[in-house]
Length: 243
Image 1 (cartoon, helix red, strand yellow):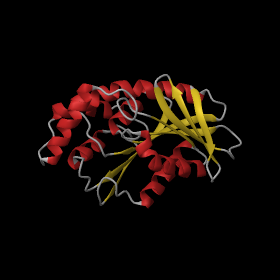
Image 2 (cartoon, rainbow, N blue to C red):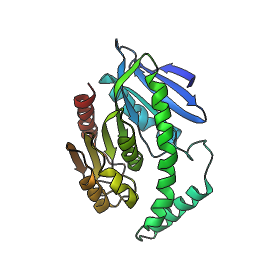
Image 3 (cartoon, rainbow, N blue to C red):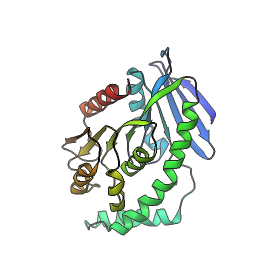
Image 4 (tube, helix red, strand yellow):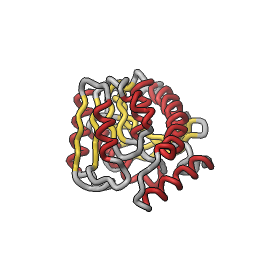
């Protein structure tokens, strides 16, 4: 891990950009912490620069609760090399949504499965590097999307103790079996009128999760209409499980 920039935000949060191999990322830590801080990995749909305002807002809130947070750029997003196959699958998905047609499972598989296969090892390598820093400790949580990435991480990464997942992206049906193997505490956020999400599939996925402690927080509104209080509930969830 190589840090490439550093700035202190006005609320006492230290923001550092880094690269790990070819993968760029950002780490936020509460400067006032006297002991190693628990860590929350911030998932997102890709495009660090585009997503930065929302990511830094989540990081600031988490720092106020005593958590460090970190995120990385997804494969094929931002300045990372594009995959022709992924770009074609994304175009096919967009075409189906714009036409109001059902999204074929084959399109979802082509788009999501290769992304999960590449992104999850990168997240685990990043977690190795983050936990080697003296200011970062456990336990570790995962928060956000892409929900398929969160599912795979919850299954294969024993250092993740709890996950707050955003049901705002398509999940291959083959991953429902993986969802049944998830056992950590879960908080799932669902926007009821999300124009780019299959609501029934999201409900079926929630039902499939094997966790004994799982909750579904559904709000009216579209994909970007998540109310502020929903974030407060997620913050309380991580405080309960990571402090």
